[in-house]
Amino acid sequence: MAHSEEDILAGLAEIVNDETGLPADAVQKDKSFTDDLDIDSLSMMTIVTLAEEKFEVRIPDEEVKNLNTVGDAVSFIAQAQA
Amino acid sequence: MSDQPNVVVTGLGTTSPLGGDVPTTWAAALAGKSGVRTLEQDWVSQYELPVTFAGQLAVPAEDVLSRPETRRMDPSAQFAMIAAREAWADAGSPELPGERIGAVIASGIGGVITLVNAWDTIRDQGVRRVLPLTVPMLMPNSPAAYVSIEVGAKAGAHTPVSACASGAEAIGYGLEMIRTGRADVVVAGGTEAAIHPLPIASFAKMQALSTRNDDPAGASRPYDVNRDGFVLGEGAGVLVLEREDHAIARGARIYARVAGLGITSDAYAVAPPDPTGAGQERAFRLALENAGVHASDVVHVNAHATSTPAGDGVEAAAMRRALGDDADHVAISATKSMTGHLLGGAGALESIFTIMAIVDRQAPPTINVSDPEPDLPIDLVRDVPRPLRDGDIAAVNNGFGFGGHNATLVFTSS
Image (cartoon, rainbow over all chains, first blue to last red; front, side, top):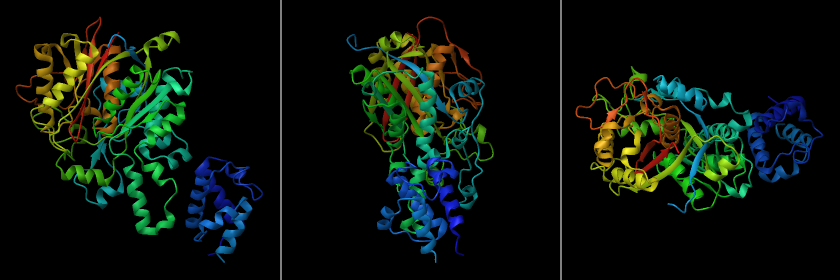
């Protein structure tokens, strides 16, 4: 079953909270993973791996560098599950 | 030794089957409590494990650490961090350049839980599900690395690996770091998190574990004629070691002096100890010599004493030979009777017990010894603590490991 963008954002926020301790409401679509959320490359790969499992999608490793903002990730996952 | 600086202990920390910190753990040990319980994990019945109990942490790590910390660290590193934070705070969080601080955190087995779980993930869900921090989590130096980051230790972070002698070796390594001028303060100890079907199955197959499934708290019974193996435990112990003049200059509270270290190897077999105990005896003698302590100064030994049929007798005889007739006046305690065997964490937790025995002048009891080995050549403290005399005293901690590793530490009151 496809997840809505709202569901995806909430799910990502939960993963980011687990991984980094950042409050879930800090994870907004316009936030940059590196500049705003201070997420390093290893944490980003962890978040991507957990997101693949949660949303049953594949996020190719080479695509991760294009996911600059939380919104980028939400859009990619929404399209990938279509 | 005269040109080497004295080294003292200024901080203690633990999380153990008896408590989530040193005061709780030590009080439980003096009270003769057991931290060994029946395991409630599903895998116990799922795999029909032959041993269904262990010494699990009294306070689960996830109750103490943040969720990101428990996700990013193997349990062995989690336990070490809990103990290191307590020890560092207990030492008054010394302020000195990181280049003068060392970290030495041992582990016997390393991140076995992370390793095996990651393999389960690959097998069941494929390689894409493996998390990127898997190797940094499972590597045995992970606890030392995390502790070095925690306290800003830049003089070197090390991980002695010598099975159940690891924790004692780590304290010895820290002692040498300060003696040789590499550091002024060293956070030293050991950790282990191996309560998992794989180590249990392997140790059980060796017939090294007690199988008293109907009496977990009574299973670890060092020197008792009916002992049938050790009880697996988990946890960590960490000490803050400090150059004595540095500690005095900053007005730190001093628990005891780390006076000497003796290390030998049996070169005999990969699991059982040399039945002659020659290596253990030599480690004991070397440690006394290294400390400049005579056998008559020793009032207490925290023995390695794991409750295996083969090991306890070898150690008792070796201690007797090293101490000679002075052994008649030495209160010997086997605290694994209460905690189980913390493997790489054992030497560190038991060093904390040894130090607290000096501080409180009480040797902790050995529990479960209802029928002691006849002709036991040592004076075992049973059931209740025994007072230790006033004045300058020395106490010893033994740590021995699979592979024939022998490490003996001497602590003194001044």
